[in-house]
Image (cartoon, rainbow, N blue to C red; front, side, top):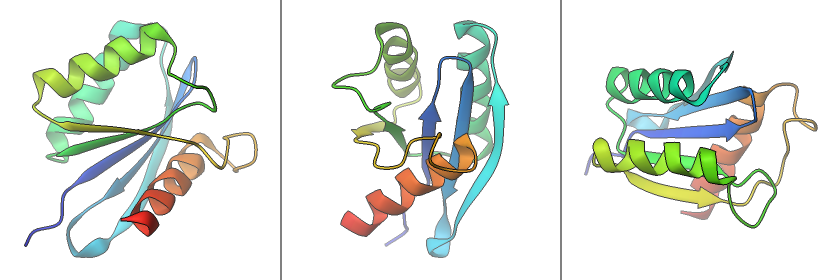
Amino acid sequence: MRQKTILALDLGTRHVGVALSGSGGTISSLEDFQYKDLFELERRLKTLIKDYDIELLLVGDMGQERLPQNLDQVVRKLTDQNHLKLKIVPERFTSFQARSHSQAALNILRDFLGRC
């Protein structure tokens, strides 16, 4: 059985950390990126989803009970449009504790894979 390609996100109000889990169990972080508005965030994430043939979007909950409404709408729109599975998970390591947002995304991904 082929392993799902997972895109893990550490969302911030202007920065995003990104990590991937691909075939063969490999995991890696990608470069953080900044966005100036929600349209840019959606466009950048859509490109990643297409480029890496993502099947599961894994999003850290920003240490809150739920994602802020504007970010939640973007994430849900992308999952619906691209027929992805969505999993919002508690963040154990914030981007403040990690060296970067992408390191935080990698921690989110490792934590999730350790529980599967």
